[in-house]
Image (cartoon, rainbow over all chains, first blue to last red; front, side, top):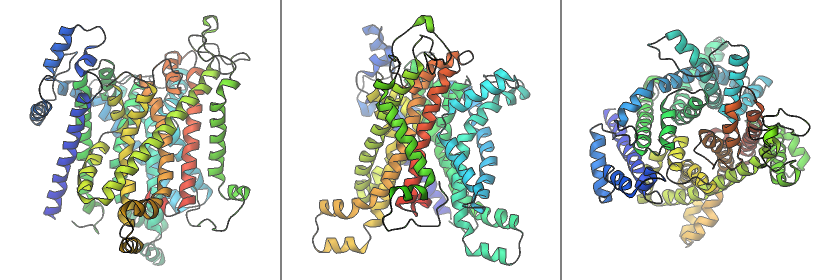
Length: 313
Length: 289
């Protein structure tokens, strides 16, 4: 068992290494002089030379990479060009809204999607199934801003039930924190729900055809018990795996949702950085998010035996 | 996803109409897509105004007889702009689907066939997949001056790893088959082996995947433009129209309503078509994808 765990943990190193190389090369391989791009259209030659030196762009590529990688390993993501502050600190400041939105969305989506998927698989082919599947392909196709602005216009502007946009920190006021998260969570949750409902249905369909389900029914267990305790439990691994890999989709959605609702999170930080060509921030955000993604998926992989006792390392 | 998972489609040839009755949802998707493509292609002839013509006197008009979808903050006709936006989305969707499929196919075949390359290529793909697609596209967009071509490249690159994985999986399965061994034994050379015996197996899953990629690309383009890091603002893409319209969402919601609805319908119809293709081409695929 431990050899598997060790191998699985070690396997994340090359993935993170590739992410680091991609992020490093992103700026260096861009067409044109990166220092000139960062400096902008009105920069003088001295400005460009200064930025080049500040980013170490005047040194050989390999030396640049080694220096940069050493810094990274020491937990230093570099400094923002415009704000002249450590990138890590900027990211930490913006992390609360993003994490809050991602978590509430995930919970909301799971609470809706898993019952929907189970129900659809249980009554496969019926109108219930077809309705649920039609709804999920619809939710998967509708752009985040259509749902978002629809909810804002309906619930915030017309009925004035909920705040239009913005974010309030939990520490400041838990109630307003919650009320500001309702609409963004529904908006993004519908997309994520579609993904999870589809995978839940597909896995449940397979599981419901297995012999142990027939046995469970034959010995007279109540249907809810068969569905939830036997079938869903055995279908848990693919569903949880999809939740993990779907994290990439979720984070992409968070970026857009933050923009719709003017939430000052990581997504907004990234967009501001792109508009100002503040590359150290862009690089830092990608590195941090990719690391979180890899670690979450590592944790899920390692949790398989807990979810399904049939799996042993 | 239709409910026909249990029944395999009939193998005998059937007429188009019967086939459409058998698959009502995919047929509906296909018809909707045809209608949307037709309006996009015909946009220069069926629109009522020049999509760029500003008419400041008529700014932010609600939908009326003159301006069917109303006007934007510069008094430009939203009906004309929305139909023209379809051309941009369609072009980007098709270009990204074709480019990522072809590049993914090439890398996937190499990875599936050459052990050494496999180890390296798949690590690179794993690394790319760890970066959320939109984030990678945003980062790529920041590297150079925006244009439709750059948007296509920026959306294509994050889509490639999934195609590579799909192709590699097919190649790995197929190369173990007895008929490949037989073909090798009678001296079939590598290029012929690839073209005649291995690649045809990737066709069905790739077609389905390409459809989903097109749908996703249309959506991602609009997200990038909406965030202000996509297609240059002067191009009337759906994302750009919505990005400009969001400032007036309280007083002129039609600025975002019509382009959003067209966008949703296009993505929806492509996704429905993809689900239908998947069920028709290979019912077993329904479980793998």
